[in-house]
Image (tube, rainbow, N blue to C red):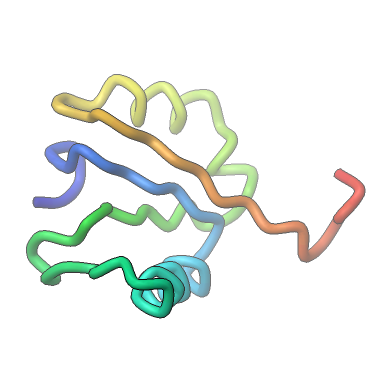
Length: 81
């Protein structure tokens, strides 16, 4: 179950974040699940600008069947922002 059909969606800034999150979850006792049915669908937004884009956010919140939307933003370039 992926894309708009997935009930849980986590948006991240980039590909590194997308690969790291499942590893962190598993290391902390949360079973990731199967590739065809992960515990959460992680979307790589290819940058903070795309993640925070109003169209992106609107589409995620309006997706059919969506129950939860989460965001992970790191402070690697401008911690003060």
